[in-house]
Amino acid sequence: MRLIAISLLGFLLAACGGSSSSSSSSSSGGGAAAGGLTSWPASQQGEDPPPAPEQFEPIISNGDTLASMLPANIVNRLFDPVAFGYTVNDISDPIIVEHMVRASFAQLQDGSRLQHAYHWYGHPYENSEVALMPVEFLNRYGTKLYGEIVLPYAAKGSPKEGPFPVIIALQGLNTNVAMYRWWHRLFADNGYMVFAFDFSGQGHSDDEGEGDPGNNLHDAQDAMRYLFEKSSIASVLNAEQVGVIGHSMGAGGVLRVQEQEASNATEPNPVRIRAAVAAAPVGESVSASPIPIMIQTGDHDGPIAPIPFANPAIVRPLYDSFEGDRAFIVAEASTHGQHTNYPLLPTATWGREIAANYSLAWMNYYLLDDAAALAVLEGGHPHLSFLHDSATRINGVEKAYRGNGLAPDPDEFQ
Image 1 (cartoon, helix red, strand yellow):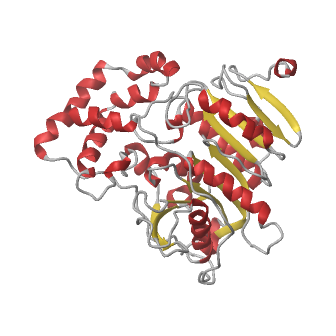
Image 2 (cartoon, one colour):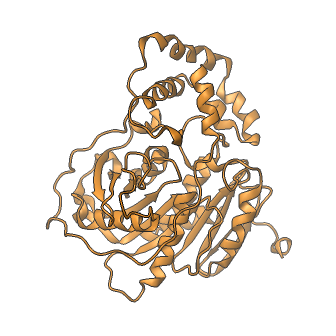
């Protein structure tokens, strides 16, 4: 299990960080073919790692023994409060252990950016449940970027059910699209078309070419332009129902994208961002908040990795500065790894449930006018932080939550 031990050291490095400065929006591209789709284009499942060398198969088979030694239903209860519930759960699952061993070997020979530490083989329980369309497109500087269009309902429905609402997904520093596949699948399974892509210099995308400053806002704008103007599924997208989500560096991109909405408010543009979820932003500031914004973080989220208690206090002033509808969701005992599906990263097992429930409800409410989503947003959760206030302001109504999911006495928060 030496490779796993080595990998664990790398996993605890920062997944995410700051991002580049932004400027004005980009030029337009060509149009998509006219007419609607009658059937989905060819798609595939997420990429699994190739088999490991034969001499290492005994290492993989040891996963069954480890699983019997660490029954997850018992151990999770012990390790969740100290943010290692998912780690123990993954170590005790032979399918995940096998996946990680094979992925570690594959990283050494598949062209991965080894300095980024994280493999691009997703998660064994997510890969098989999605229908992906891998695509490549150029940003405005000519750098080739890799993206994945995640089809609604795993392509088991019909394009004629559209037009579909859209989620643009932005990743963290030194990560890749596969690390957030659970999040993409969540929205796709609920009828959204999801477009995730690797920023330049990350994942399967090329390094920045000459003259490319690595501006994440520009990459995000160019990805959106490609999706709506040049992709093969452009004709079934609903340009009036577009949201953006992002984690860490990607959360910074989310804030800059929504800030740009204010700058472009008077410009003609058929595609507008209507709602945003920024997960674990790091030291960000914005000068405008023209759309509903949710910030998600956790007790043990830190500016760069699981540094206890830091991030909720750091980003709360950012939340307080938003003028419109807003939400601030702090998950108990959760870390910077809460929003990834990368195996073994430490976080509490309920963290992803909280992230899923709140981010989906936020988009359903503001993009789809789903009244039932409001009950989720204002209903609390048993594992919201006991240490930091969670809060919402929806339609002008302020509510605060702590720990048990109930709204405390407002006088306690004066």
